[in-house]
Amino acid sequence: MEEWTVRVEHCDTKKEKPDTDHLEFGRSFTDHMFVMDYSEPLGWHDARIVPYQKLTIDPSAMAFHYGQTVFEGMKAYYTENGEIQLFRPDKNLARLNHSNDRLCIPPVDEEFVLKAIKQLIYTDKEWIPKAEGTSLYIRPFIISTEPYLGVAPSHHYKLIVILSPVGAYYKEGINPVKIAVENHYVRAVKGGTGEAKTGGNYASSLKAQEMVSKQGYSQVLWLDGVEKKYIEEVGSMNVFFKINGEVVTPALNGSILSGVTRDSVIELLKYWDVPVTERRISMEELYQAYVDGQLEEAFGTGTAAVISPIGELAWEGKKLEVNNGKIGETAKRLYDTMSGIQYGKVEDPFGWIVKV
Ligand code: COI
Image 1 (tube, rainbow, N blue to C red):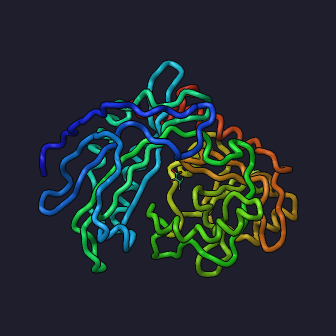
Image 2: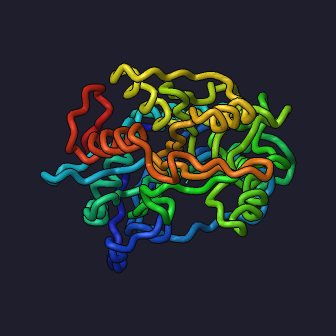
Image 3: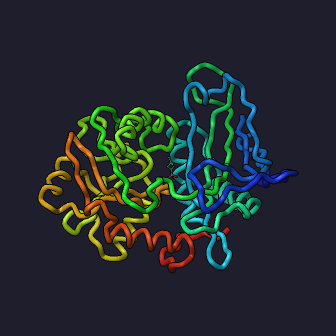
């Protein structure tokens, strides 16, 4: 393997930056991107920061045909005193390698990729938005690029990292979203790729999402792929419920994505001595808790979504209005603390913050 260094090629002209008071999620991209290639016998090589540009890829590249791709999502935040910080990037890069393993993609050197990401962020630091609730979204992804139509693991890959200044993922911001429970389609099954962050999981979620969005729901809540009984996740976030004082989230079972925000929320709740349990929870149990007046809160967690309260759940023709459609105290406390740590306003007792 070659000596790990990042070659830098700066762009000549800078792009116009978006209005940071009206930022949409994932619509604009910074001036530079990071690229690294994989081929055999070289392994990962030619790490470079180059001007953001279109790719030239053979139409027979395997990623286009069989979806051998993985991605990650993390954010860089500006603190009030002008420092740039990341939130648990080591967890995201470990998960990238976990996804790589599931998709037969060769592992990356996590430490080196983190160094490269820091260098990329530093290169485009003037793109990090400063308005309240905004950040620089970091999207590392790997695609298989070998020109071949046989179904087999590719021998060539590209790791690319792009950066996007973002606002809230949902148009509702921190206001509660409406979610519909999906009873027909499934997202993943145990032994499948649900635990990996790969495009196919998201592609297969579109049909159901498209159908419920016409009825005013932001996303679908997926049930287990076998019995369609147990709650799994919302495609862009993990879910939590507060039932009679206890916070419950579906246990990781092989088909649920192991969210970094999910893990952080569990840690925070334990730190506060709030009872929190990871276990199987059925939609029937949740509905019964609602009927009994014990469903106090529902919220989703994710890098893009942060902490997103759920104000209404639609299930089998019934509507479960949670906490009168308002954000609950636990979700609010988690949002304030989590974003406080991320923006450097609240002390980080866990060592989660990494400076750029
Ligand atoms: C993230 O939270 O970073 C995600 O990857 C969700 C995404 C599909 C927007």
